[in-house]
Length: 282
Ligand code: C2E
Ligand code: MG
Ligand code: MG
Ligand code: MG
Image (cartoon, rainbow, N blue to C red; front, side, top):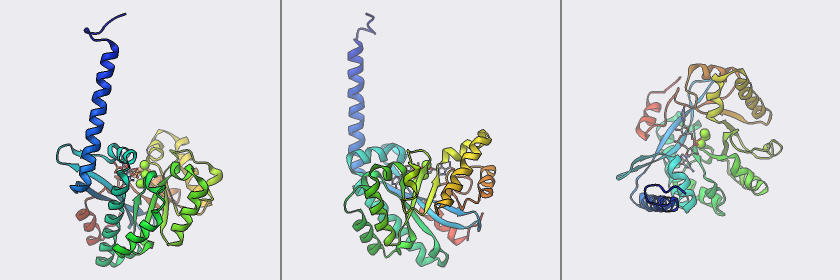
């Protein structure tokens, strides 16, 4: 058997595992500190109405700016926060910060009355027994009208426990909170359940939008998703629109809303506020 530079394969492997475990522990420790040290910041990406060209909502997207690690994208730390349970206090902070921001815009700008703030929920948050109570409390504390709040959940979250999800979503609907089904098409939706969820909006995942340039079949798929959503009484947000071509195809399909770098990237609070000041229109 060949030995690599004197070390056995097993030793090399064990060292690597050890390094990875240490790295992971350090990440968890830093993440734990990050909440207390207020290293999180919310960015806000506008969602635009195809019919008016105006802002219809914002999606709150969390950022971790660590003094030692720099900028860490949510794709890298949300899963860790989810596994360790840190997502629960973090999610609470995100929800409250987003609601507070939305209420601040409402009090400054009359046109913000019709605007919604979308907040992503993680699956761990979604299965918290006191989720509805926590959201209600946040709305009271921040004085935000529930009609200005929209929660984003994913297919895998709703499919996990269908009957409970339906009860939970109906409770949220009764409070007048809106629901979006995020990243649609990437999970394992069962079409036979889709109509049972009281969701207001379906968000077509960015991968479908960017694949449209690859050929007419991909365009047909997007068209079909829009038709399906409309037949089920949902409106549609196309995620990740980056080009004028993508924008025009989606507009032609009577898709209601657009989100993507073509319009705006996720913005710092001040830059998002500027959009109201300037009465931004696309
Ligand atoms: P998501 O909820 O599907 O958010 C959309 C992601 O697509 C965001 O990435 C956004 O910056 C990005 N995006 C928007 N338009 C474009 C575009 O035109 N082109 C490209 N290439 N990307 C675009 P981000 O902020 O890195 O977030 C990634 C994911 O992390 C989110 O996907 C969401 O699942 C999760 N996440 C972000 N913030 C939160 C949060 O506050 N709570 C929870 N639970 N999850 C969050
Ligand atoms: Mg989202
Ligand atoms: Mg999404
Ligand atoms: Mg997505």
